[in-house]
Structures are given as C-alpha cells and as structure tokens.
Image 1 (cartoon, rainbow, N blue to C red):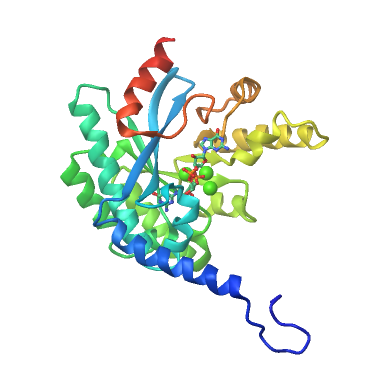
Image 2: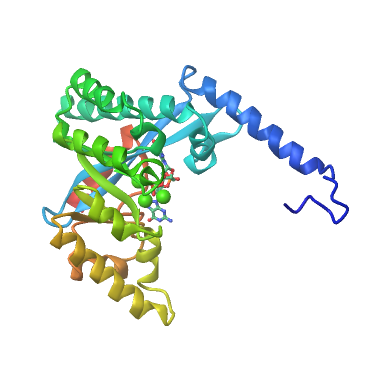
Length: 283
Ligand code: C2E
Ligand code: CA
Ligand code: CA
Ligand code: CA
C-alpha cells in the first residue's frame, strides 16, 4: 500500500485514521438507524413498453441521517455489506416495501410489482427463503408481484448454493432479475447456471447509446445482441438509467421490454409515487 514508504515503516497518516474513525462512527450509527426509523425506502417507477404503463417500481433504500441529511445507499450499503448489518437492513427493506405495495393497493390503486435489491450475504443465508415467504404471507402480497434483484456477487462464494436458493424462491412464484448485467466478467456463464426471469442492463450500456465516440457502434451492437439473447432465453429485459429521448427510442427499436430512469421518474418517496405515475400516464 501507498503508506509504506521505502523505509518499510508504516507512516502515520492522520487523514487515514480520520477516515477509519468516520467509518466506524457510521457503522455504529447505522446499527441504530433501523430502530430509530431513520431508513426510508424510495421507489423508482419502471415503464412497461408493452402495456405503456408503469407496472412496477424498484425499492431503493436511503438513510435519513439526523445531522447529514439524506444519505444515498452508495455511502452505506457497501459498509453494511461487510457485516451482518446488511441482513437487518435488507429484511427491513423487504418488509417495508411489501407493506407499502399492499398499502397503495388498499388505497385503491392497481397493484404494482415491487423490485427489491438483495445482497449476496442475504441470499446465501439458509433462512432467507422462509423469511421471504413469511414476509409475503404477513403483508398479503402475492409472490408473483415480488421481484428480487441479484448481482453476480451471489455467484462468487458458492454458486451451487446460490442457484439452489434462487430456484426455491422461484418455486414460491417470486421473480428473479439479474442486476447490473454486462458489468462483470462472467455474465454469460451466469446466464447458463441460473434460472432467471429478467435481465437488467446496466446504465453504462444505456449511456453509451448517445455518446459521441467510436464505441457507439460497438455498444449498440452489443446492446442489441444482449436483448436478443435474453429474449431467446425467455427473459424480460429492463434497461436502467434511461435519461434521454434518444436512449428511449433506441431501446424501443431494439425490443427492450421495460425502461427505468430519470427520463420517466427519479426514485420517489412513497407518497409521491402514485401522483407521479398518474401524471406520467395522463400527460
Ligand atoms: P442499482 O440497484 O443498480 O440501482 C440503480 C441506481 O441508479 C439507483 O441509485 C438509482 O437511483 C440510479 N438511477 C436510476 N435512474 C437513473 C438515471 O436515469 N440516471 C442515473 N445516473 N442514475 C439513475 P441509488 O438509489 O443511489 O442506489 C445505488 C445502489 O445501492 C443500487 O444500485 C443498489 O446496488 C444499492 N441499493 C439500493 N437500495 C438497496 C437495498 O435495499 N439493498 C441493497 N442490498 N442494495 C441497495
Ligand atoms: Ca437494482
Ligand atoms: Ca443496476
Ligand atoms: Ca449497481
């Protein structure tokens, strides 16, 4: 590491210890965040190109920190993932999002499918399948209205066990989507090993659609090939990070099924979700 000077001694770097301290403080505060009800779930609408309606939302957690305001998941989920904290946070998000989905429905809105991010550490716990079943049961959400988003990370430790957990979840009727597709090294291998329902194409591919570079032709050809491949495997294709009308029309022409991104809506607090969907669909 950089802090080893040529002498071989580890030089004291105050900024490192400050960073370590902040991180530790963050972890301690994060542990209390759930009981203090500082975590909030935002929901980002996903636009279904077949029905031309918002048919689903992705649940994205935020931390309402008393001093620092709204903290994005990128700043605390990776820390939580290093310990069992992610299991507590993940269970809470699952319960809260399923409860919210049914609350909207009980308020008279059509049911929306709810997509929830699941970390490897969560999925690989033996209790996970029965926990999800219990949450579905107590919330009353039918299993096929729940989609779990997993990443390639679930295949790193124990791919056989991961595949088994996924099969069991699918037997309950839950849908499984592979998130961030195309960013890892072995995306294709995972398509062979896992039985899935949907692929989420990473926003890096979507962004490349209207960039000014020689890579654009490559990116478009790749994108088209990924969509065709997914379809031939019977998977739905969701594109995330759709920000421009050009990206939207390119993705439509390539046969993408579902679009998600700022062009349609940002992640929203629960009370803004239906007003936004109705505005999207009526105007
Ligand atoms: P992700 O699952 O890939 O989620 C998509 C991210 O892209 C979200 O960031 C979303 O707000 C952002 N996004 C959506 N549309 C656009 C767009 O048009 N342009 C751009 N530039 N970005 C867009 P967010 O909410 O900050 O979440 C970041 C990551 O944190 C997520 O990436 C996911 O990996 C993780 N995460 C969020 N909530 C949870 C959770 O409940 N559990 C776990 N395990 N991870 C979570
Ligand atoms: Ca996701
Ligand atoms: Ca993603
Ligand atoms: Ca991601």
